[in-house]
Image (cartoon, rainbow, N blue to C red):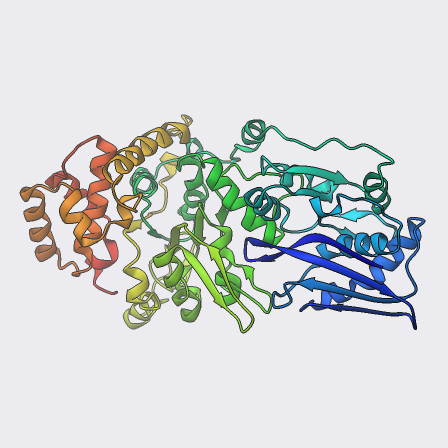
Length: 510
């Protein structure tokens, strides 16, 4: 006997419909899966067999051939367990449903017949919404996540037996829905706030500028000066993510398996802080079966690299593609996988590689040549993509003992949002969305820089010995400073403040 039904295979965060064809014939019992099935799919036979038996169903002891089409698409993961089981049940007459073609099946089977959650429920559901006309059966634990794809009928199931009874019409199950706005309100909460930060007014000003113009930044200060504390609060002053941005972010975390338990939608900006020992693949993504790396998990949020010079040079160099293109392309023999990776890069480093006692450098612990070598671990091309170099000195004791709280994140975010809205209005006829994305042509045509500001920048570069690359970077930052102030044109005051945030260029060591 023959049956046909549908499931999906994931490539990055894109899902493709896969046809599951099952053929039962007489003869010596034999079981084979064809159609470029990975190891985890081929192992499904034993899980499916045990789950069927423990659910009171019969596993056919016949010649079984299962084809997964298209045959040139790699299939990986345990989500194929359920469609394989339903295909066997339909071919052996244990499931009778004339509308089987209307359903798409996803789910991992436990040996006792329970349905375990799978990765990629949201991108799978979104792909079905684009196709239209298909209903999705998923494990109950994936119900909320899949239902976020409004417009697709979702039927969550707890066990294989539940699926059989539903398909045979023995039980009725209503399509599952969620209130997306309610999910946003439940999950839009940050555990930290800028009101908790004492002192560091100049650093907080730089962070506000970075958030307003989407400028990558580097903080330079001794251990214990608060660099990490400041970085962790940057997502709280970024504009709230739109539904489209939240869906993009959630899809990536769903595919990676990093979506928090009982979280259907990531309604806050992600913050990722990988350790400096991370591998190239861990940062950028990769593997035999490509999975997203930290740069993609930080999509629409913040990627924080603490102790920047301690990262391997090769690891830092792979950042250049996602910083430039906003996506990661992982090429393999079978296919090319793409993951989005638009993030705000925030890095931190000590002023030198010497030993510190508290936040004070020990005398004689580092030579001038060692200090130069430490700073030159950051390549020029990477530094070219960082707009703000911000000194973060140790906080004074009298500032730490202040009882009053600092400015809350909500007030800073209001100014950031207003500045972003001015940029969107300015760039409405272009494909850029923030000042950091401006090219030289955009600076010339859209930035509205006064002749006095241009002159002030030229004089400052000459007197302070700033590098040539500081010119356009400073102008972009100056445009953001003007936007925060609500000014239509960039004045010399804005330019001079922007120049003050080019610490490493002025130092001359990089």
